[in-house]
Length: 213
Image (tube, rainbow, N blue to C red; front, top):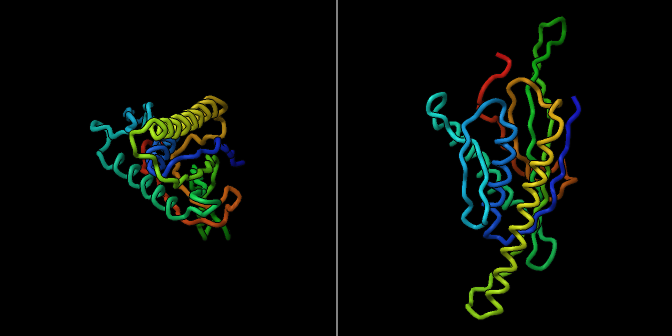
């Protein structure tokens, strides 16, 4: 199976914006690529003027454990990402997040006597993030107010552009998506081309529904 790679537009954020922006992006992709029907939950961002949809627990079919597990794995990946950032200039840091979807396939070797499990990655979403550590203006003078608004408008515009790209990609062909249960992992690297230099890995997406049954 060929792996499809989706390179999302680069995102530049102030330090205090990173967590919520990455939560928005990752949960949006996970909801779109959930392997089966899931309960939606709309989340209104506190730091941005937008709302996104994420996976929620469904009390009739599954426990709140599902939402907790997805939350924990996304949040852990974001914290690892923040620790893996590399300096690229004065007050500037950068890093790359890769969200991968994969399925596990059991194969047998030596006349069927030895079983082996392969992890087949069929899709990756790759996002490079630049984090700006420049102190945020806090005064009430006109220049500080204008600068705060500029920072906010720039980050919000870039985030919305990334989300539009996700919607555009997800509206395309899905013949590469397997009709079986699959999982996800989130890798953090310093640069988009450092595929083998993995700082963090989050595995085993909770089972939502087995479409093969």
